[in-house]
Length: 139
Image (cartoon, rainbow, N blue to C red; front, side, top):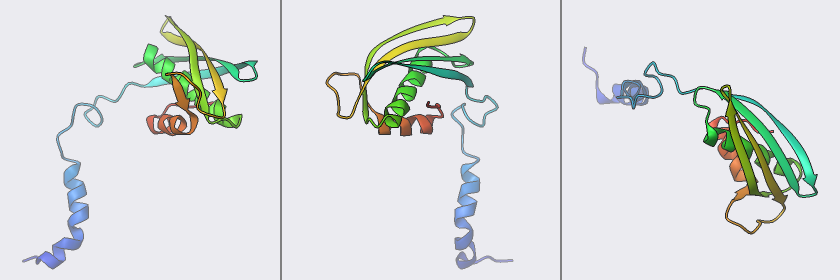
């Protein structure tokens, strides 16, 4: 049986997708070594002043570390700012500790309708989208 190019062309996208699945792996997804699984254990929020809020977050599991718990706090404040009708936040301070495999962060942020001064500012809308893309839950 001879196949002409006109008969194969409509099948090309499916064939190419199938071949892509056979491409070499970088050793992460699909190689039998699943990505580390972080367990997001919840967020506690306290309003300290009109535009000042404290976030206590905790995580555990494989891949949990100081950066991951700080990212979780950042995601929580971004969503919180949006819920309160604000578009921005600014990092004030974060204390991180680990005990028994549970990482905790106690973070304080200001929230505001306009971009605040400072280097550690957060655009709430952009950050919430990034958190969703990365699979990090928000408030």
